[in-house]
Length: 244
Image (cartoon, rainbow, N blue to C red; front, side):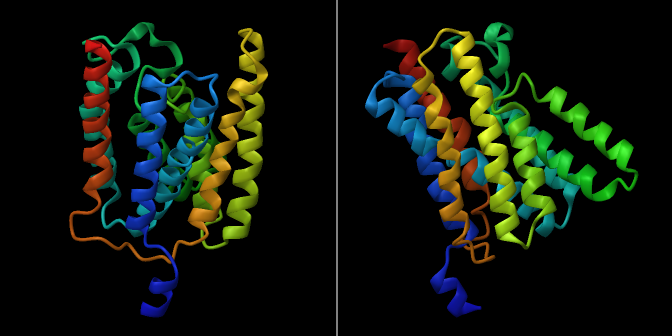
């Protein structure tokens, strides 16, 4: 086990990689033009974060001692993150900006729904009811950052947990579908087709996740790093954007 840990990456190490990618992505959204080479490159790197967190939604569900406490923790931080997210997105000092359209709520909100979807998939025995619950959660995710893609990614990582090849295959399939959706949406809005190609950067998570050795790593409180960093950095960037 120790030998495997030396050869691979712990969950904590991968989460820090995801946090670094997220910071790069959000700095780009705030200060770098989307159509620039730098902007596209930074967003490409930034796509690593969301699917990585979806992967750890599935892992967290498998390892948690209490799903209810896990869900409660995500729900609380979804609320805590909402004001910083709104400030970052709209430069408005509002808790919720209802005019924001498809990104009214933060990614913590959609990760919370993703956990509920994994929970339902694992615990509800009736397939029709299970499908109905997941469909309902997908509808609820529409005003959230990453929408139902987070739910689909999390379910893929859960259903094929223990078989990384199948996880990678079905995740890649979902990622291509996601890319097509963004391309059609971009074309409908009259934006350059290349402007959304960075979305394929989600595939960059696979080489990182392939190195996961199954260990949690970090100290006792390491799990709080993402929860705390997410609203803190959004608040800092949002305040800078609002005042420059």
